[in-house]
Amino acid sequence: MTLTRIVPLILALLALAPVTSAQNVHARHPGHRHHRPGKAADRLGLTGAQREQAKALARQHKDEISGLRKAVHTAHAELKRVMQATPQDADAVRAASRSLAAAQENLSVARGARRADVRSVLTPEQQAQAQQQQRAQKRADREQRRAQHKAERQSKRDATGKPRKA
Image 1 (spheres, rainbow, N blue to C red):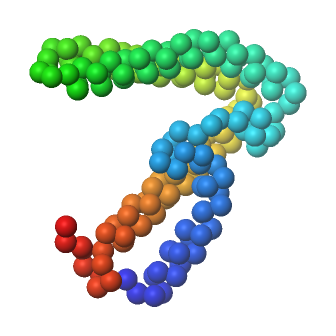
Image 2: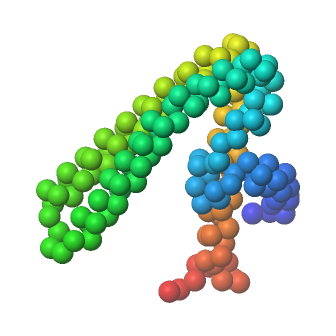
Image 3: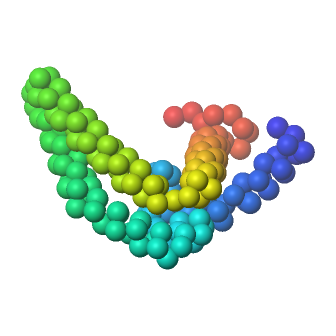
């Protein structure tokens, strides 16, 4: 790669670094961020009434989603336990996998319902702006993953640029 191609790439990565590090709390899992509804409300310019409606809708879903998250955690722990059992029972693994998939599906449906309810409070312009911000965040997350992957590949190479031998 020539210097004329490397410099713009480095500058682009440096420009994205503050954005992605500030918005991405979990660096290993870019899609999993702590949600801060207040900041989203500020970015979208929600009115006081819209904020209150959104908070009330989110509270309505809070207990349901919390319970479903616990169910996913429990199902995941059960799958892990079954997978580590000796001798391994294929039928038990299948059953635990189905249980985890069903729990994850229920959680996804509940999160989608919450999102739809909260989105119904927004004006069409705010909905479009929210969608645009989500796309921008996904792009930033993808670029961060690419940069991390590239850094990992580079660290596996020796000074000559050839892959290290194990």
